[in-house]
Image (tube, rainbow, N blue to C red; front, side, top):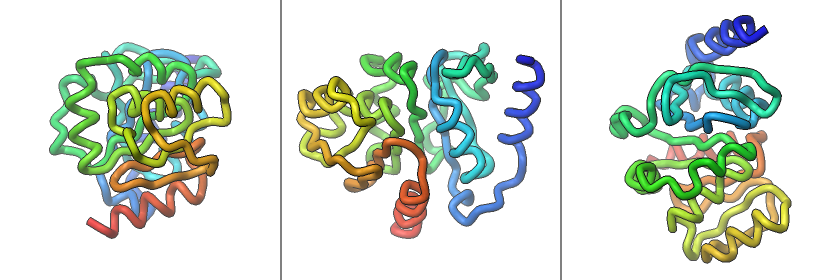
Length: 186
């Protein structure tokens, strides 16, 4: 089962880009455990050729126990190789909430283009990147309280764009439209 999932995931990620927004280079940060398989699938289906990254390249496991092998180690990437950083949601995304080694990478992409899904918005909030900025997350009292505690301006909408930062509850049509608009603005 795991081998079949790995083959399927590798086929999805290695196919040629088909969509207009796929001309950008996307680095997708997944946590080592309990990442949202649905988020990753929708991102891969919509953006085409993505590069996955994690703390290491051993197997990472989704919330539904699908295992994938990340392509890159997040701390060793060259930020100039990518146009966007997308943080996948899921409970496991909180793994990065206080990761000091990730801060320079987050700061770099906050000026270039960064998107968060679901709970991963908390990672940006704790990094101080959402102070005074509008943001959204899942409809969970603790998640919303965390954004407010970190001085973000929570907006109860599915997708919020503030500058080069895009936050969404999940990757939906509006998310991809805003991503496309931000790409054209550059």
